[in-house]
Length: 361
Image (cartoon, rainbow, N blue to C red; front, side):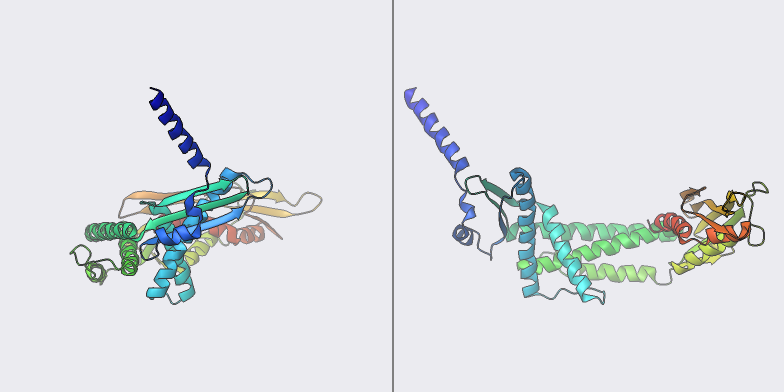
């Protein structure tokens, strides 16, 4: 029993000593020997604790910084071994997007990602270290490729069904999903290339994503992707005081029709040809009649309506902008005031945000 108690005391003492001792990974020599760059990606940061800083909060921040440094080491490897290309002409934007993608994936993966931090109260120094084996990352990339290709294949089959059923909104969504999956595959291919991973298995052989790209192009040949909108324009009448639109009752409809054209939509007079029906109801409200000491005549421009998807047979969006403090104007006459109010960009933007978000999503 005495021997056992002595052993437990010694073991406990060693554990406590190990917790208070500076971890060995703090030393550069140790990291270089035990985490060689041909096998590991690492990130290391250190800093001095400043006055009024909380050590635990600072350590959490430094752990994220260490992961970012690790991601930077991956990026440096990629830039040194391959040329990252993309479809856009803006190479700087592409490079920035790719770098952000690497950081996001590295931070989100956390597969066998080892993150450590340490605060030395005697010196006020803080340290954080992140490390991951290249082979572990490679395995993750391979799994992502297989999964993304499978999801792209499924999305393409769904796309065929939506096109056959005339469900254009759902079809557009599947096209975006398919392209996103194929872009993901391209990204992970680049990462695997840098990792010098064997991709001889059927699931990983390059070329499958190219076949899917060609399949997608064939499906879309002759398919009209234009967004066709039928507009049901109305003017809500209230009373002689508030109704100020007489000579230009369709002013709101004209403004929104132009905005839709500028955003790639086509307006049709035949509801049977439309993908969407936009119901748009305009009205006005008197804000001031000019009888006060300032003599200001001002009116609110109001708009309410909805967007209906004909193929899906459901309402996608509704809006009701009534007496909004940002949508009024003053004028020489009631009609002059309401024309100015309806032409305010804020009203158009509020309506278009609702419409476009529903169409594009």
